[in-house]
Length: 290
Image (cartoon, rainbow, N blue to C red; front, side):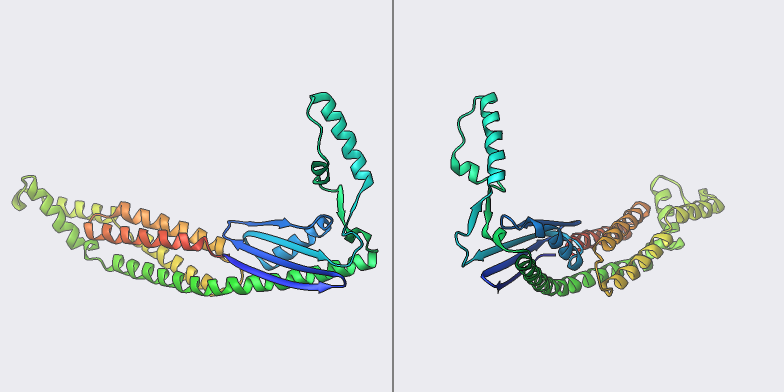
């Protein structure tokens, strides 16, 4: 499900903004954009996202402004020395051009935010404030997604109603009766030159029984009805149901294909094709459900 969540706040000399964007996905994929030095929050951020969101592709961005630190950044001498040694070694072996100061400073860890000047107590307090802000952003995101969910509920319920109506039509289709099958068999015999007086009635009855057995879709209809009940129950369930609905969509499609393959009349085939169209639409919409 798609959605957007945003919160902002302040703590001591820091102001921050969380922005969350969600799009459809088969599983949960959380991608983070954090300021340098705040990689320490990545694990907790992912944990909070998985707590509030079942599946989807989530882009979480934290923007942090520090207003009253001396310089806002500092050079990590230990990391810089290691980087310089590595650059010197690589440039000597590969005969590449010298690296610029800007390229070196762009490497992660060389330049650190002024947050690294905080003591442990200040840092823990800032981290706690940022994580509280993240929970607020997740709540905002889920509120946005819930509005989309209400629309999806109506769409999916309407599609299930259509599947139900088409299943009922298939069940009551006149072509399924033994009389209709017998009449079609006699018409086919007449077309190839057999007349009623030249055909053994017992043999006709045997063929009708055989054709009726091969064309029987009672089992498919019962399974379709069971899947309909399961889908309606899932739509009333709280929590992630997308994967279960995807499975039901596959089962709907399987029964529909079997129904079409067993069909011995144009009217039943037409119903099966209409059913297949609705099931495909249902399957597409289910991909939007968490």
